Image (tube, helix red, strand yellow):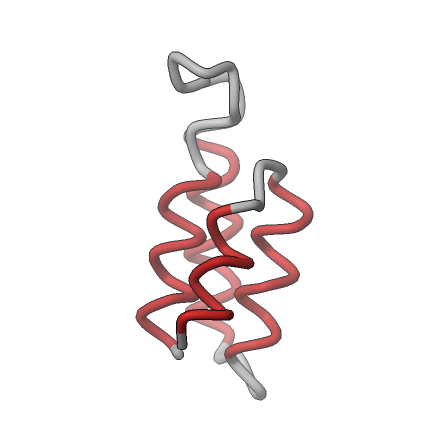
Length: 67
């Protein structure tokens, strides 16, 4: 788990975060895919103080929870 968390800490893009999430969910349900799409749309122009897209953090939390 520590290696996984270290990997997650170094992810800063939506593409990397999404890839990590899908790696943790072998067969994502349609509802999960729709929830991600809705979240991406709702937060598309939001950034954190660091400049990182806001949605990266919630996606990483979902990936960690799925693990």
